[in-house]
Image (cartoon, rainbow, N blue to C red; front, side):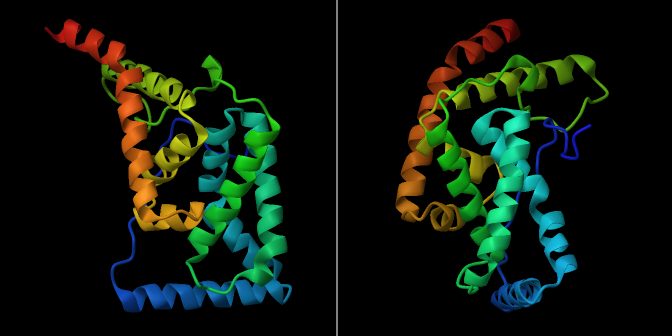
Length: 214
């Protein structure tokens, strides 16, 4: 059995820390944690793995579409994080820095492999956490999740990645911009274009649903 979480469980939205003092304290704590790891504290690195393993695995899965590849890619990413920790200076949050490394590896993976559509048995359900008390409602949400994932797989990589980071992983516009190293305006523009394409790709499904309701 895989040590990684089930695909159907969505992550809680990551809200930016509004309090500047709290933000500085968090960055200082991150820098102290990194310093311990660089000094050879293996338990400190385990904290980073525990903190980010779920998010990194899901990001890898959403970008490559295969459980096996996602597991391999996750291990590759954490190895890269460990080797790069000496370069962390705290200019951005540890979370943003980790996501940047992860995205770079995911993009490199996509360059090395032909883009693929997710297989039916590996569809990632992004709109429901678990089966609810109403099976019919659960089936509806599961089907909607499949349709959304199928539509995402047809987006260009630069559109898909902003949707995944902002909508599915809860990063703010600014955090997405830092991870992808592009202007905030470009993030918003890509999201707008991606949503326009998603609406078009999902149009037939939405129209079918409206016909059933009427």
